[in-house]
Image (cartoon, rainbow, N blue to C red; front, side, top):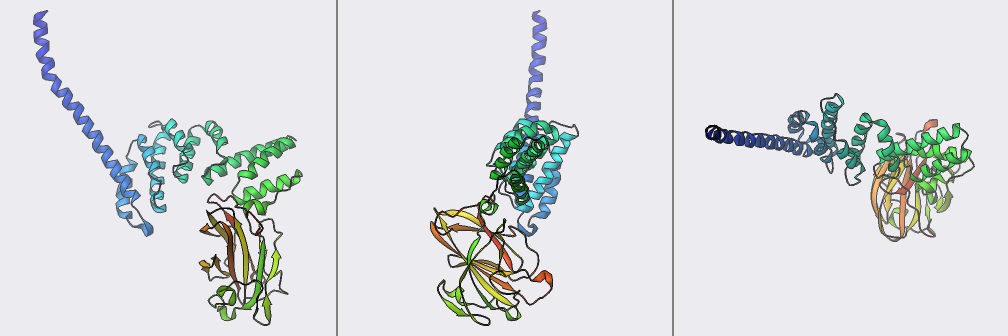
Length: 389
């Protein structure tokens, strides 16, 4: 027995350094692989506007495509604060890694993915992408998770959650359970941000006898003071400084295109807040410019978005400061066509819009209208707090 021990001990002693060396080598290989992945991720995150850094990203994406599925979470987390172009690269990498799992080559980190989707501090588009991966693995389980996302800051996730609720309402209506449908629809319209979803829910509620002020829900500004028409000869009105741009005086009158003009009140009764500038003037005016003014009272300082839809040339000012403008005509209009992040002061905020109509006379060019709303970054309407509304 002693002899065997004496023989075995040297063998063990001689082999031990080899085992340790092997373990250390494995550690360094893994560390080096992780370092290469982290470097590739950083190169893609560095891609900037107009494709700056795309060449390095082309090589880096190959490294990420060869990464283990376990690196998926780092890629998704890397989308936060990345440029839109960099996010496109990272989306490609994330989808490639997830596809490995879908093909049975590895398992998705489901618990980590679920926690990531529920973390509202992560990038909204990355969270929506993570949710898509969960749906591919177990759609039923993902739909249960979706129920809690109807008020999510990610519009992509919120849209799916509201869509699920709409499907439930349709099912309830089909079974004649009107009260259940009314409850679901009322919950849906409170949290919906997508225009088409809001439109459908409002229509269904109307058929059930529940009228909803959609314009107010969206934060549409429907009451305005307007003045005009001033000229827009040869489309020069856009750059011409007319009196309302110099100083705002709602009691003043000025020389207009053909006659004296003064401020007048108009009110839109359109469900989605469309303001028709042909309404206060006879006929369909051409080669003209007008101004619209609204006083919005905010109960606090706050960051909001001005969202404008308009198919004609326009400029906009907030509290006397010019924000933006487009010298284009009849290029099509849609709600939230232009989004302008702004800072509201507490109290009255003065909103002035300049709107030009050109010389074209075809039927599709006679529209002279706009819609403007105030909302937060998710699209939830912001309401005026006082007499200015």
